Length: 451
Ligand code: ATP
Image (tube, rainbow, N blue to C red; front, side, top):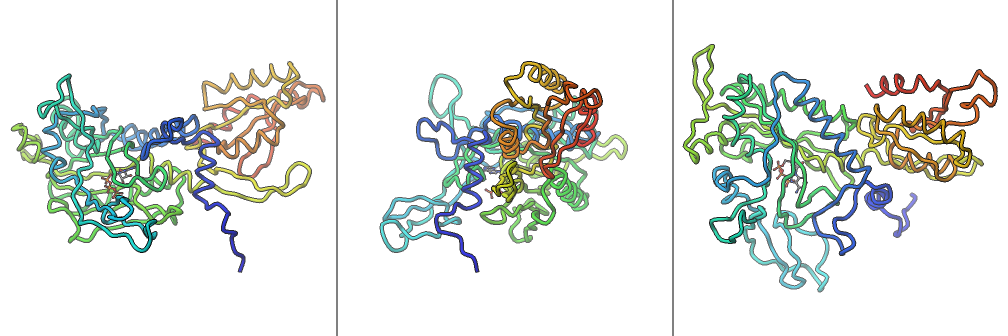
């Protein structure tokens, strides 16, 4: 059996290094030593996250007649969190080791020994509220206390009546929102998997009481299909169904969509049938009726809700883990080398196409390549690269996951006869094959591949 040398980095270590090297993810405030639980997304990461958000928004909101969007605030009236139960019940149990002073979630204890020797010696578990507190206005006292939202969902419930009254929607219909959420996690860990600042994509789909089971099934299937559409393979995805005994008293079903990360099978999204708990709570705390009147059946009721709730950062991490591959290839001189490549689905790739002049010291080549580059700019996320030899530029783009590279060479200029004039090479990231196509064919060809 072949054994890995102890010093060989794990898949996660290699991925973390690649993400920094290629501008996907940087530790927050790194010049000050970093800030635990916070991450910044670099140029490639910002595009990747944007593509995830756009894929979700297009599929869940724009291409459906029965879902509308919302863009609510991060800080809301503190009563929102009293009504939702977050001020009293959004707790994790926390323990400390009496010897090394380490601190963990009581349900996520470390497998390692205590650095002070032997096993950890834990304190009794104490409840720790995960909401970040702040104050609105100049006076810092109880009356100005408010919270950074720990989820985007409650902002949707709090605006249910306004959306209902201002849109043309009828039950069943949904309100969707993408935005930042904050949780003061006791142990941020597994890279960006559990952070203190992250982004959620949440849908509250309002339904007639009694139709909960069928709509819950519908959304579980729809969400699973969506993950496949952004390139996550079905065999790396699974569903975790909560037994009835583990459900909150108001919920009738909850299924988590799980992904097989290198550090274990973990949740990407939770899909819960929450009854009318949230709207009823806001009705109770605000005194405003959260009812829907069905003008066909003349029934009046507080709608029930099915809530698919996903995390942008966790999906980004799943896509990065899934796309990352190392393979042995021959370089231009036939020497074997390891190629790192991010095989993102083109729809999700940060940059769709890179344009190179074969040589950067030939003004005619550079001018022609620039013309091609500028022609593509309005259509795709395009990158210009004229540094190093072509092989190095391909390797760089492979690590960034760019599906196609276009090279402008002397044939393009017509220097080797009119037959090849105005043609370029189009190189495919996955097959590494190059084909010669006309400049005028690039946009329709890539657009059809992206569809
Ligand atoms: P976990 O059990 O992992 O703490 P959760 O069940 O509390 O997650 P939800 O409250 O259901 O999570 O949040 C919905 C989604 O928001 C999660 O599926 C996840 O994708 C994302 N999410 C929640 N907490 C975090 C976090 N600390 N960092 C990154 N994403 C998160």
